Length: 74
Image (cartoon, rainbow, N blue to C red; front, top):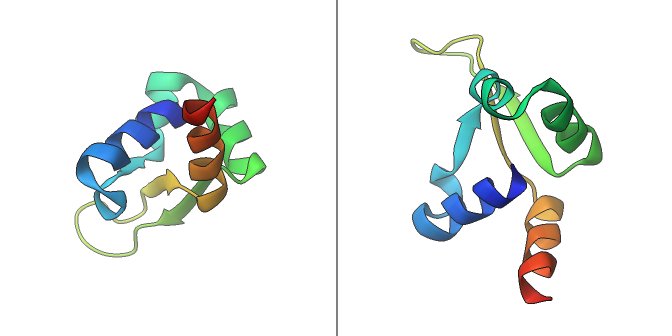
């Protein structure tokens, strides 16, 4: 999951690399998403306006980015 975020960031750039939490849970399962959030590898924020109001958006944190960068450097 973190690898997917890292690759999306590499291609699109950091501001465009967020995913809805419900889509992530559907794709990866609840436990991995919850663990990544609890570990600080992902940030999340509720959307307050527009058609996606109430949904939660997740993106890679600096710590998650550093973790994945270390994986790719080794």
